[in-house]
Length: 193
Image 1: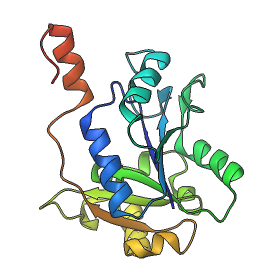
Image 2 (image 1 turned 180 degrees about the vertical axis):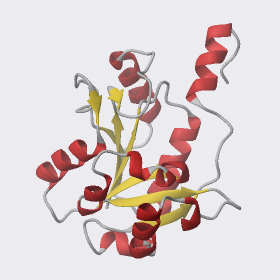
Image 3 (image 1 turned 135 degrees about the horizontal axis):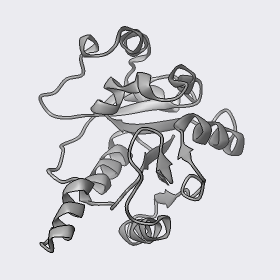
């Protein structure tokens, strides 16, 4: 299976690297493709330019040969949506390669806000990072997402058995760091480490 990890990465930081590395190991992925976006469909525009964010990613990922950067979203005009990226990847990679979209539990809880979210399951699996002591509860989701979660929840071993359609969880210890905090520290002229 190929992992997919999207975001603005404005800037990329240790928590991103930790999550991708944990997913790589816990999910038995062959590789992780990082998908930096131009303008996210659900968030404010990145502050750093596309070229600077790409350069930061290249520096951050250079020590792990199983990490690759897919720049296709980065140079698009206007918002980027996962449904379009996944359709393009399916066209490139074919219908049989298992794709695994790596997300946090907060993204699963808001999945209904993603464009054409119901169609995503035909294109990819979802791997949800589960924080210790924070089990995923369908009761916290809108009913339509809860129904999909109950129907599609599967063990990690299923990721390699089919190209798409499962939701799996994997343990991930969160790190107390965020891109927002880094940008704010740099704006104040203080250390971002």
